[in-house]
Image (cartoon, rainbow, N blue to C red):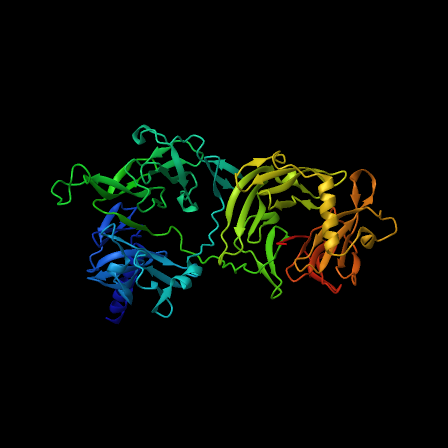
Length: 592
């Protein structure tokens, strides 16, 4: 008898396990009039979730098969969760939000509640109140998953959370064309796409919107939004192959709705339109004859109705969400160090180094454009791209600026040890990169420029800017030397250095120190010589041994130290003449 009971228990256990393993995955959650409906792409079934009797406001997936949602009972809001990996999941109450339904509902749309957000640590959920209500300074509620507690945040406290560090770096717009950058090189997505179609009355394209999540899982298709100049703006979502072929408009879509999202099987879920029944009290043949619905388009491009009279849907991530590596703030950093394809920043105030962990591509070179913008070049495969970041941001965001239309070999020399050196000019909004290395004499033969204002590239210095004449440069040099009470004779080091060989000069931000170079005439490569350092009072005047002004980097820190490179790496010399080793890297740029 005991054996029979044990066998029955084991059979039931196996049955439960089998039921767990066969539990249909929830791929999409649709909300229609406050009720959740679950969709599974394998079964093609949309099943109402009847265990929740309150009105559902929004949904958020924190990881695969686990979700949080806000439920409303009259004006009271409750945060609940569901474990979708088990059969017949039951709502679990997490906490009561301190906000009311009226505070988070967009009054322009009766059911348009604000969504929930999760921070990068996957530890906190945020619910935002209606931003048009200015009476209450606390406009965000944050729920900590571990502690189960809720507290309010002011706008200032929420700013660091709201700052994005997601690198949208493989999508960019150039000259009206939309590009996706793959590790193999650049692929243009819209060469074959003409959005001025008949049903849009030939309206000109105003803008394109895109993000990495718009690419299908297999990388073969892309969905993007087009915005047209019609009154206050109007647009539709479009689908195309990743090479720009077979463009198709989702002609009943609207860019102001929830963005379309891809499922694992290549299907696309989006908000479409359907005829509004004439029995609907809000029906009006002139202005309200249609209503929103949820549609699904299969991989072959055939669309069908998924849920009628519904506007909101949420897709379960194909893979569990992962915590991205956190990027420390770059505020206060004055030096960007490039070493073996990685960027590291140095903060002289507290003598700390901050790795730039969110950049995954190979960094080639960098240059500061003003104090809070760093332009830098990366190599993706063998092709070079220009990116930038805003240093002052609490969490810096990577922005892909343009394709240099250059190969790594055009700017990189193993023989010379140079790696596409970059320069920025503030008076003239240009970012330049050296090209065409000449191995025999280890020099670059050209420069390519990017104009930060016009967003155009040239292979030459624009004529309207000119170079300036030698006489003007000479006069500027004499004027600055005079202000520092220095002369050419004072800076002459003697020996075989010509008295008039001063070519490079720079004054520290503190106006205490002066850096200059003396050039020697050595054959067809032109002049070269060491970097020199002096204090304005003349008490310190020294040659920085092991330096060569043609093959080195130098720059000032705000505390008056001069950073420079020699054969051993990055060193700094203080106003008292003390030299210390800062890094073993051989390439850097400073703000000053």
